[in-house]
Image (cartoon, rainbow over the protein chains, first blue to last red):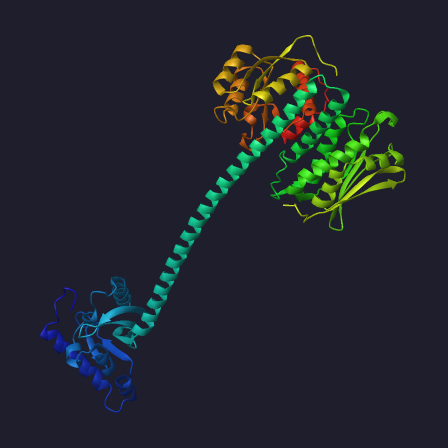
Length: 388
Length: 144
């Protein structure tokens, strides 16, 4: 007995035995129900709620086997003698409540055998009523479900382990991500710093050339310094804020070309400052920006300089589009003659052609469409030996 | 180029690279500004701005004492009537609202680009830009 209640008195036990006899007398030898109940492997008991403390007045052999108690040790005792330290108080309360309310109940709880070993008991308890509807007995059946419980526990512990492993993994992933983020921000700080210095130095180079241009140079020297100045300008454009948030490592060719052309045209005021543009949104790897800037600068400059035969307000027409995995840039004008274009074409220096052919893998050709002469540059959208 | 010469407009250049500052001074003078001062450090810069009451401040973000150009710009915006324009290679370092500055000229810039930008700014200061005056590419590219 675990709880502090008093054990049944001799009187109570003998009253229970009378009730048992009464029960037996109603189910004499040969009663198939009595035989079935005694013979089944399912442990079963009957209690008498009209007796004091609702004692067991019948227990079958299977119940004795399950609990390890003898028949005589059982009759007259309330069921609670098989409870123990790990018996759930809540389960016991549910049983008491069902008895008070005269209802069916099913609970799984830890009970103890006579030798003290615990087992998981799957208990069904239901009231038995007479023809007037009064509750005369409670019928209980017990099943040892320790194996099932063990499986449940095993599953739980496997689950717990899985949960732990998951938490551990998540922790590791968090740690790694944190480390990567740290390295990444370090890297982008470094790139930012380098970028900053490169731009500053380009600016310095250009300022130095600017100082030369402010001196009293001869026309030939002025022309050379000017050309260098413009080339460094074009190169600088490749280092402007071309960073594309949607596509890291690529730059927008259309905006790039617009800025570059408008820069070239500021030095050639006879041309209209706003060309006619037909531009698609095209992305190129950022590594192509510098060679493209240098090459376009040479071409556009050579097309628009030497303006003696050019009318005031002459207008360039510029288009950029993709065609068969190639970027095609057209620079032409109705105000350019074929002879002039050919001259410009021939005037392109060797290094520019080499840059175009080798680094941009581009082809450049003279074009003449309905009297609109110019040049067309076609280059692969990706790849290129120095593309990245 | 029609520039209002009624009143000389003063410019201050806050730039730690001496040669770049010199280049900018020459360009500014070409456009018609009077150079009122130059500084490469936060305290000097604030001092120069306070003393010379310029109409325009060109401010580099990274000065000799760190990324203090932003503080200088904020000071000029809050304490003077000067237009403030950042001249920087590092736009990423600037706060979204540019601390109230008018715009950015990003490095590397070109002489002609800066000239266009300065002429435009002179027009803004003198309030004689056409209503539909196009913002020069150097300033425009920066504003977005």
